[in-house]
Amino acid sequence: MNKPFYLGIDVGGTKCSVTAGTSGMEILKKVSFPTQTEKGPYHAINMLLQNAEEIANALGRTKLKAAGISCGGPLDSKKGIVQSPPNLPGWDNIPVVKLFEEKLGVPVYLQNDANACALAEWSYGAGKGTKNMVFLTFGTGMGGGLIIDGRLYSGTNDLAGEVGHVRLAEDGPEAYGKKGSFEGFCSGTGIALIAKRILYEKFSLGQPVTFCPDIADVDRITAKDVAEAAWAGDKTAIKIFEISGEYLGKGLAVLIDVLNPEMIVIGSIYARCRQFIEPACMEVIRREALEPAGAVCQIVPAGLGDQVGDYASLSVAIVGNEKD
Figure 1 (cartoon, rainbow, N blue to C red):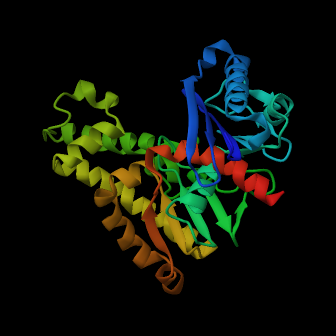
Figure 2 (figure 1 turned 90 degrees about the horizontal axis):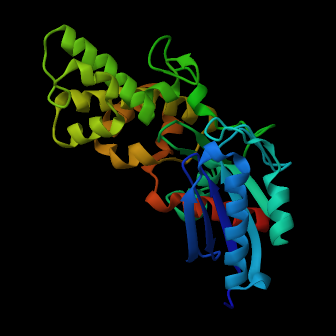
């Protein structure tokens, strides 16, 4: 192996992975395994350390430039510490950067997963070439990453971009412990909550719903169920996405007015179900955002698709190494 390469370490509540790649995002090797949070943090950490070392040795240790870690927050990127993410029970003040630097002997950088995805989309995806960009996850939850004046902006203590916590309505689906929050309307969890409210209303009026014929099934409805029904043409399912799209527009209008970005990149559910969400979203933006700011901002789906996790952790390594 003659090419310089980087390692990307992706830590999730369900699975972890180690990916080796070049600065041009040629993926050289990848290993994934279940996180198994019930076994405690050092089960996954030791597996990650072992796989990272084995991949580095196989590809040529002297060619390894840096490593990047993408992990759910809260965390301290400057100190390299993971601080009790809700999806990683027991990961309390774990000095992950120190552990990997000791094992690999190269600089290691840490970012939360939304910031890491923002770096990836900005460097290699839909936002490539922009100077001011917002990335929104719109997956199970709603998180954000901010690129301002050509740099990742993470705030005073790595909490910039936590848009899911912003309240968009006095009442509505609850997420982040707050009714009517951005995440409550615009996430997989939120879409399921909107669906449940509408389905119970339908049943109370004696109106059948094709994708949920039994009231006993309402509490088991997921965003995936709603998406499948929408693709099949179900009007109730499409209406659920339109409600989410309306509140997405409200949230984006605020971001456009405050940050004046040239692009907002939205991943996951938005990218897959754009045709049901976008019309209502854009109508609200046209009505609520400052016209000159809205006119220069593109709203686009994420470009990296299912590979974004690989690119995200690698981008943390590459951008961190370039910055130093």
